[in-house]
Image (cartoon, rainbow, N blue to C red; front, side, top):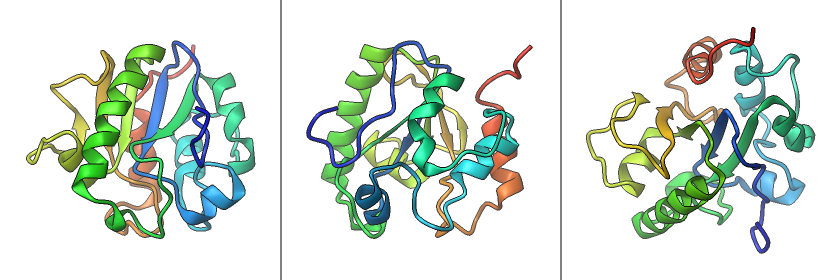
Length: 169
């Protein structure tokens, strides 16, 4: 979208639209999603079988070729997501609902339980498929792949992300 510090990687009818919390300062500076060293997004989606090879941040637009996309709940880059206010998360959640409704991905995968709970007003939400849909899409909350999130290791991320789309073939 024009005016965003980091453009959305999106097209109509994607299999999975990944939604980060907000861009890191590194991602915003480089102009690519999940560009911060230590972020496990790229190896996790590859290990999950969502991409045929390990890709890197500079290839984020090529995700579209694999039925995948990326956006963020909040557009403002920060050093850590903890710098975001609940108001920013709620406003971002409303904008995300509109974006998803316009592009109609099959699945929305929100990368971070705390941001989902605050932004969507679901304080008891747990990791996994949510009972509510966002923008009409089946909505999953999955662990954030940031290297700052020590609660889930790479094999856990891959196992959970694998559930977002049935294997090809």
